[in-house]
View (cartoon, chains in turn orange, purple):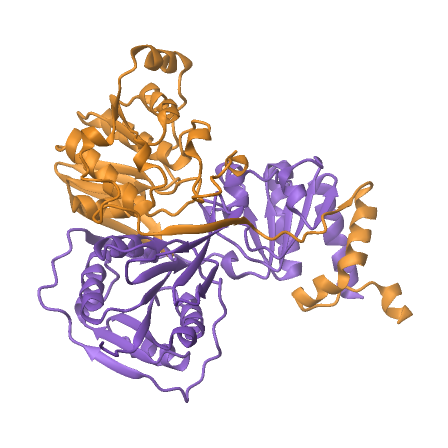
Length: 266
Length: 333
């Protein structure tokens, strides 16, 4: 559970080295979309993630699902990157490892901070036509036709490859990962690890690529909840609850639900 | 030193005006912030036949409007808007840009920030100015259970997105005046690489739950589709909306529009009823702003029960039926 993850008090960033290795759900949908493309076209899928060594488990899972190869971008100096720096690093890795790519698929959200920013920013880095939150994708030659539902508009859009999409969780329900596949992935270990020496980003802290935002402080949301428990027979519990909170509920819904006896008593 | 007045920009997102009045809410927040740094509030309106929005943003407190009215901007295009915005920012150098976290804004803002080589924080729930005039962006992190104070120290503009409903708009006032600059469409606007083939506005089935005061949410603990459907009756009595968890949407008990959580709606009701929901992070990430939570679950240890103001340990279906019956009786009397 992400909620129980420790965070680094000093930097205010998530201690990813202690996070359990689990693929982000939206990314699984993106991988599923890639696998469905591969099912219909000749394609090679490279799974890529950035994180601590433990993030390898996510890539094993990707390989077991059907990715052809996997790349882990891992270097201590990348820790604490914001989306600005992350997208720059990913872009450098893509340019180095798979410069001839046709489509970049990203999950539309991440489960820890849910900024949904890395995909669109990566499109800028790679100077690609891009569409976020796609639900459906069709390939016709070099043309990519996508559908999405955004701000209550159903849109169909078209662009030429190479292109980038971020995949919503609306469609592309991920296939089950076979345990045998996972064992096979572990055994053959086809994960390439890229550190900064190999990536040669001038310096991850250089002006061009460094994080733009700084987390000054992280704190728990204020909780002044009473957390009152009502037990027992539902009708008793409901009556007790309504009697205790009738004024509050009445105010919010704009109708009086105050009990007869009480109103009479006043 | 040049003594130019600082400017806080608000991107005018008017496409779904009646659902989310986020632009007006941002103008109001920008007015607050502007006082601390002696800045003007500038609203941007790009589109075609946009007089209505120029008047609207003026009446809601903008000091200045930068408007581009051109048939080429008839439909929203991320690429076109990016090119225009980048151009304007470089020309005028705003201090802060606020953008509504609509679907459009959530795609547009990160790309704009990247182009401008500046920072961006997403879905801020609070914005403040420090003594040094720096914008503090308070944003949910780690699945919404924690808040982070984020600053963009060395790069400008400072950018933030804000979800609809986070801040309050100020009332419409026709006597307000703004300096309206009608600008020509920039020269050399690139042909978009992403072509809009077709689009249609979806019929709105129900009132959007994003703005509802009372929301009745149901999870797997409702047992079946019929029981789940009764949540609508409670919602109707309370004048609210119905929300759902992902398993329920997958099972076809509720529409995707009802999905509350990380991949769905973020809600901020005054009262939230949570029926048969265990409280997985994917769901609770959408509940950050619920004022008062009433959870009903057989399991007193469920995360949702621990998060609640009122936790009723009982079968969700039984409580729902009783609550409907009791409320009907009380309202009639």
